[in-house]
Image (cartoon, rainbow, N blue to C red):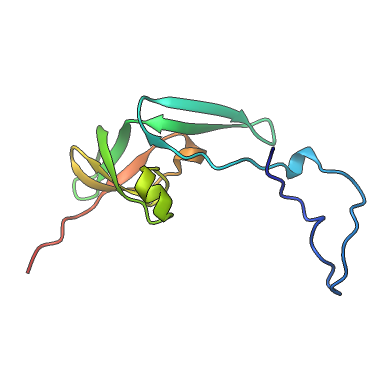
Length: 132
C-alpha cells in the first residue's frame, strides 16, 4: 500500500463530486514517513522524481553538533532523545525528527536537519539557562 497525493477525490468548487477520468499516476505517489531512531547506522536510498536520489536515515548513533559560540562543528555520539515536540508518540519512542532535542556528549542539542529527507543528523547546542 502506498500514499497517494492526487486530487481526484476532492469536490468541485460548486460542491459537486469530481468523477475520476483516469487512474493513479506515478508522479502522484508519495511515501510513508521515515521514523529515525537511535541505533547502529542504517540508511535507505530512494530514487525520486527527476532521477535524483533521497538518502533516508533509518537509524543513527552520531550527530554533527555545532557550537554557535565557537562556530565549531564536531561529530558526537547521541546518548538519548530528550524531547520531540513534533509528536508525543515520537517523544515516547525516541524518534528523531527536525526540532527534536537530543542529549550528546557535548550537552543538549536541537536537530536542525531532516534525517528522513537529508540523510544526515545536524544539530546545534542549546545554551543552558542560568538559574536566577
